[in-house]
Amino acid sequence: MKIKNTFIFSIQALSGYPARTLLVLLAMSMGVASVMLLTSLGEGAKRYVNREFTSLGTHILFVLPGRSETTGGPPPMLGQTPRDLTLEDALSLTRNPSIGKVAPIVVGSAPVSWNGKDREVTILGTTADMFEIRQLAMGQGRFLPVQDPSRGSGVAVIGNKIKKEIFGNRSALGEWIRIQDRRFQVIGVLEKKGQSLGLDMSDLVIIPVASAQSLFNTSSLFRIMLEANNRNDVQAAKEAVLRTIKERHDNEDDITVITQDAILSTFDRILTALTFTVAGIAAISLAVAGILIMNVMLISVSQRKSEIGLLKAIGATGSQVLWVFLTEAAILSMIGAILGIFIAYSGMVVIMRLFPDFPVHIPAWSVAASVFTAQLTGILFGVLPARRAAALDPVLALSRR
Amino acid sequence: MILLSHMDRVFRVGEEEVYALKDVNLSLQSGEYVAVMGPSGSGKSTLLNILGLLDRPTNGTYQLENENTTSLSDEDQALVRRNKIGFVFQFFHLIPRLTAAENVELPLILAGIDPKERKNRVTEALAVLGLKDRAKHRPDQLSGGQRQRVAIARATIMRPSMILADEPTGNLDRHSGGDVIEILENLNKSGISLVIVTHDPALGERARRNIIMTDGRIISDKTRDPAP
Image (tube, rainbow over all chains, first blue to last red):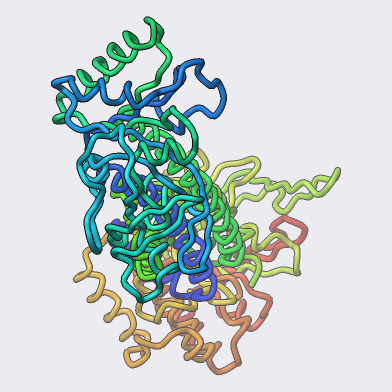
């Protein structure tokens, strides 16, 4: 019996029982589609994080007070350092040749009011360098002016959302707002920009760092954000920061420097693990589909007993019967896999419509892996019924109508 | 051509051993026309299954064309069935989803014969049996007599040396039953051995050799003189 004929015979058998065939195809295609879709979400998350970070520029470093052994992730919440980072620390870093721009950051929350409207807002105190380090863009007006960082001034740049909520459609430029008990003149409105690194840039007010320090009555910094001259200088900049601050802090290593690469690779590891986990969970549905194939094939074998008996009577060998049924299982899982790919890509289109910002992407390896797994389970679970068919006693099989 | 010696076929039913065949000795010449008769459970179907290599004897040997088939492997027995034996069943056993032509073609496909030759042989076989215009019909679109003729076409397509028919007319009306017997007898006249298992004494009368079985034994084996 030639392969082509086995194939034709199997196809005829499958189309002879359409309901059963469709059921198995449905299960198989759903299994394949869910593996592909779930990995595409994981992959999408990875790309999303990647994009967020690289939109900041690729050679950024964060300096946090306190010593931490982590290589990435959020800054330590506990373990306050005995020595704070100060504005002078930040300014001392600007003298290093491998460091380009330095932006000290003070963060706090304070009520902002204008014309009787009042709202609690995140206040970010920083310098003009922040504009380029975070690659901000202005909607109206200008950013903080370049000036001596240790001097405060009564100017403020407000986020897009704050502008809308406080000023509505009116122009905010030149207006005086009150932050706590001090007056600031609005000199610029940030362009609408989404969330970035967990900080909603449209929902804050930016003021000079010295003004923020006096507003919150503190001399310390929340952190320092700095930019190396270029990518190759990142490591040199990191060492320079550690050395400089150590000198200033009585020879004590009491800061943590995080490079963007370290954060990225941590996220990458986490999200890759996550992707594989979801893919593994989805693979269970493939196994379920395999078991369904086995059950349906077993039913098929017992329903087609007389057919199998007849095939043997007219001279089919046991291995020929085995191949007929294995081929059926293989065809089922193959068509199921193809349908699954189709469903997964349609699902991806739907997700892209619903969440245009989220970069869903079905990785090639997941297509290959799910199709391969589908084939494997289909054939693996097809072996038992096929062997049962091959071993069927023709006399018994033919004795019943 | 066929030699069965001291053949037993024992089934185990619970604790009991049931002899479907007991010490059966039989020899058939090629081209013979034999009717096997006897009451239900007398072992005549078991005998037919063993002749057709669908069943293996518990004891004894079966020689087919000077070859001891009892020692053959399952796969080799399948090849013997494919090339030397044709089956005709009471319930036709056609595959319902395949057309008449496709049913007849199956043994040729199993044997791996070229599509072109397959087509020619199927067309010829159907034409001989008067089924030319029924080639594309599925079994449920055929009458009982036509179905049995399709089954006979399938049984003869490999040009076997022996046809084994188990109650071939048992499910047919008198008229189409007569047709089917005539076809089988014509095949026999062309040199193919024919073994028919039947309840019908009238059918038995037509065969030259009559074997009567009871309780797994052959109790009578008569050969009439050839008709003038």
